[in-house]
Image (cartoon, rainbow, N blue to C red; front, side):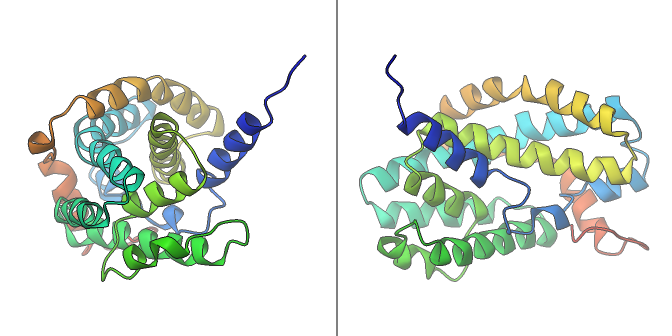
Length: 231
């Protein structure tokens, strides 16, 4: 029996890139969920599912995943100018200072990591790393490309990173039991293919989304009386 050694390696790289142990600080951001629980908008497993699914399908799919596709295509042809434009578009789409902070802070953290990984030659992308602000989505695209992942795998991994962080935050905030959290991940995972299909069918001029309640929750979080998370 012939065994393709490359596939397990790519799977391991994907798992590493999406691991909660990746030192990018994603665990410190709730993306507005902390205020949503404070207000009672999210208070149980069902409402947590509704909140995360809505954000995945109406925000992540229409912005992050859609632009991840174009970032990947720019990397494939070494079009750094186009890559920078998509990076700027991502940051411009963040609707509050906290959402922007989370995106940029995680992007910078991933840049630091890529520069220090012995098995990754990130030097060709130093020009992109030297941008004043880098979206986490943009640097995630570079990391996935360096790991030789295909686009769908990269998009799936990005979705998992988002879902895992949101469910981990909800486990503390709602709060949820461990079994409830795992059930949530199973249920939300079934929505990933739909989100990716939506993202990859959006015309470039139609990319972008606005979720007013998410933006308001994130903005109001800045003055929330007690906080566990930075956003």
